[in-house]
Length: 485
Image 1: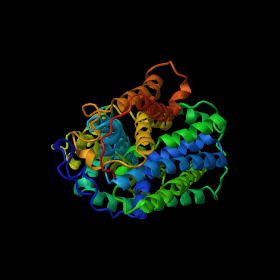
Image 2: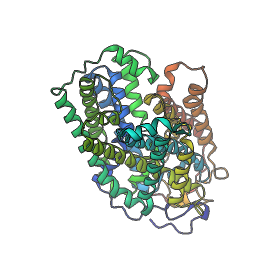
Image 3: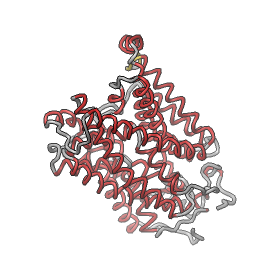
Image 4: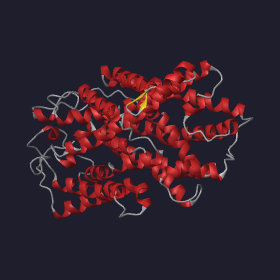
């Protein structure tokens, strides 16, 4: 769709509706292989496996929650495919042409945190390989600055810089990178699992991990109940769903390039429930085998590869895990932050510059390492911030607009989505109130029960979306008559 006479403060070529839509189901599928097949994805899956207490519980909890993820991604994915616009532009329909900047910046900040977390995970895999050398181990232990060892800082900066190269030529380069990286990681994961099973004397669904070890490894998860209990399984499902909170918002950044709705649906089907369950099972099998071989519950794959006697195999594993994590960073964090930051000042900030700004913020965050600690706790705390935004956007698009919005007006300062001075007060108020209950009270006060934080994203979606519908009923918006698409 060609946008005629757009307002300069709302338009640049990167934010315009996608002109080339050549992403098939395989490219959409590989969005998810790039997103899931990372060190953080493995770490979370292995952590949740321990919380489940058994393989049957694990398959049940991960399987059902993966279906919820599939349904939610279809909702936002179909909106992207139909309109051809990225997340911050789609948000203009519900938050207003200027109010969307608030929704975009929240997502951008989250992307910066995840960008740093994933970069740290990738550099950690390289560090685990390098300290096999006695001299580098000595350097690792003896040199420290910025709260980390000198070797960790060097590896972080190198991995951080490599990611910038991938994005140089735009979204088509991203697609080609993920089409290669996703399947490569699957091969490495299977080799790791098969090799460990052979060492362990065979394949087993029975983990045999003592309860005291399970309790020790899961004590920082912020989840009530012993591993395998009903509440532990509920928390596993909730955490797995919340892990994808960021991409529920900006999956349209990718689905906008899809050939048609069928490509989105098929890519999501194979990339989400099928791929998620398979990847999680491999993580679980690997965790069991590693415990039998090494007598430890190793939740990080680089911890396992570091124990390999063969240096070449350890090198291949470390590089593959690093590439996998670069994949998710580019897909889930760099792309989103690029569009989100560009949306604020489209005349001055392009897609690439927006990504560079996000990368710089992640570099500044590194000394503080807010991502260090329990996987489940970090995922839930970060994910909760985005619940209200998703609830409002979905309520507006599907319940109020009935899936039809005026795409041209999304680029007009004085068009249909100007609302009140460019802000939809209903959406902003609902988002703020929803955030109070999803993020601020559970994370910065003792007013709510400890378990609330595990379900913060869900409360955010329901409260944000519900309040938006109520407020829109009480304060109807004045929508100008216009051609919709």
